[in-house]
Image (tube, rainbow, N blue to C red):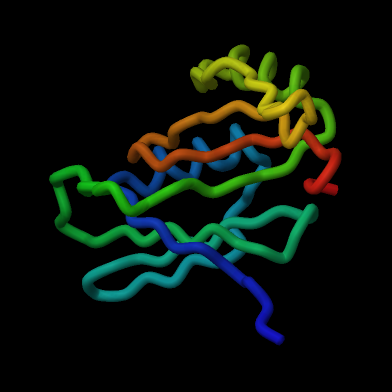
Length: 131
C-alpha cells in the first residue's frame, strides 16, 4: 500500500506563502532545502504527517498559470463556523459556508479559500465520510 506524504505547489513568494499556511492552517516549516535554482519548504502540523511542499523557483517573477487541471487541497476541522470566523478575523477572506446536501442528505459542510498564489483549499467540517 502507498502512503500519501505531501502535495507540491509552486509559489511565487516564500515568506507570503509560509505566513498564509501558518495563519490559516497552523502549518509550520518542518524542513527547508535550499538549492541553486529553487527552494523546497515542507510545512506540516501535529494533526497529520501529510505535508504541503512549497516550491519556490528562484528568479521567477510572473505568477503561475494554474490552468484548468488543478482542483484543490482539503483540510478537516472540528468547528467550521469557528474556523470561518477566525479566518475572517485574520483577514484571510474565506468564501461563504456551504452545505452540500443533494436529495436532502448532507454530504459535506465546507468553505473554500484561495492561498496567495490562487490555489484553492477546501475547509471541511468533520463528520459523515470525513471523520
